[in-house]
Image (cartoon, rainbow, N blue to C red; front, side, top):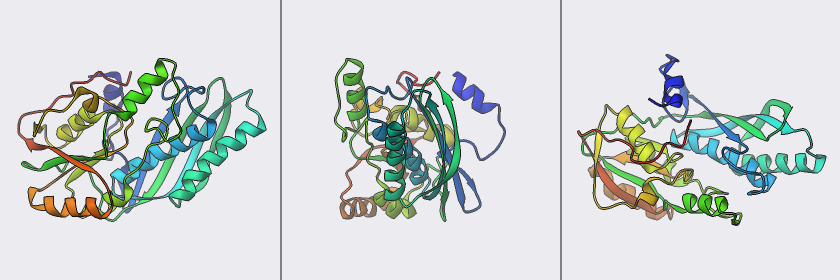
Length: 273
């Protein structure tokens, strides 16, 4: 067991284990976005950093089939930041908040050596999607294409630059497809730590299940983190409907496997401590 999994296991709440905690008709989710862990300041503009920190949190709400409504932002601001830099940061937060009709209602600030952002999202939900409900024989699929985020990160680590529309810099969330498809989905989560890792989480939560791949999948696809595409399962009877919704919302989906009894384990290197 890794340190992250061990630390989480020390808490006993049954709400822990999904992209967000469901309490009544509310979903509460939080993610950290930290300098020199998730990004370097010379990789992205301050506006792009703020926007991504919001997007990755809103992605958690979408994965739970919840509508994000409120946000609280905690931020450690480097002591040498100018007023112009603060304006750029705040505008990045506001840009995404307006895009998804989210009201930023408060949070906290403190000074430090590195830029650290913590975003909490409060959402409303009628039918939450959990990781635990994958059924035997379910098809397993993901939205969009995978691998671009890892390629972008590799380029940055080698001293290259990325455009603002790069997947690593600006994830594209598939909310229109997932909200519409949710009534036909059994289990799901967003792909934040790579397809293989998040697939292992879904299988584990669903009773230590496994997967039969329907074809060969490149390791670049399996191990590319920070994609923020949707990973989900559904009954084979719903295949035509899922494909129809994908066509209606102009969303590419890839059906790549079926749920089986044999336990699935992640084949990629851990991203966490």
